[in-house]
Image (cartoon, rainbow, N blue to C red; front, side, top):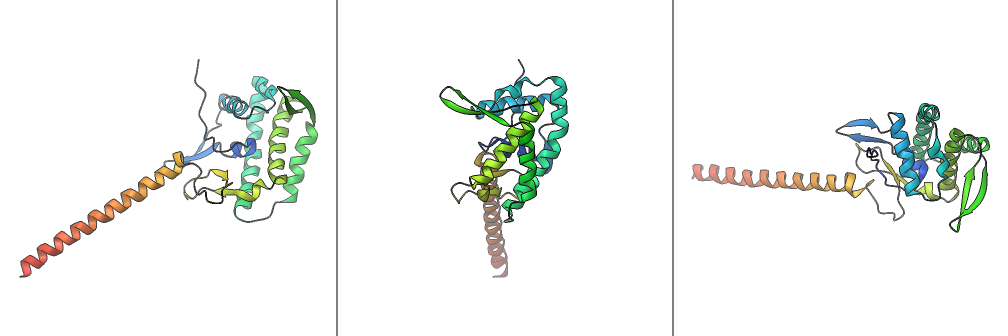
Length: 211
């Protein structure tokens, strides 16, 4: 059995996790959804991470997966542009809200109780269901005021976004960028310390020669 591809899961929100399927490594932006299987792996992981998610999206045929993969890049870019704009302090674009609402109109919701949970189940084609779920998630972030807390990672080379619920969070993740930046600062301090020590030694040698 093949292992599923790994993704940077730093958010419990479906739409934000989609945006974070682009990541930077070694100074280059990498596409984490480059083929159909990547998309299917991501959907499986999302259904594991978000138990209330409608799992019928996992039953996409090969042709549906290919169709979604072609469409999802533009949808993700739109999400990213709006999320980053809000992170930069701009107001939410009403035209974007309307486009999200139109996606839901293509796959409106019914409600079912499953395992004592009230689930929102989109109707319509599998493809429309997925974009309806993504759009609903983004609209819920807006309506609940969560997008006011969206932040860029403090690592200027990182493109991952996150919701800062504490008001103090700086990094997308301590594992991804936080520890890396701490290690870089430690190494920088160590290098500066070694340079200062070397300078002191050289100064002492020069002073000794001049005496």
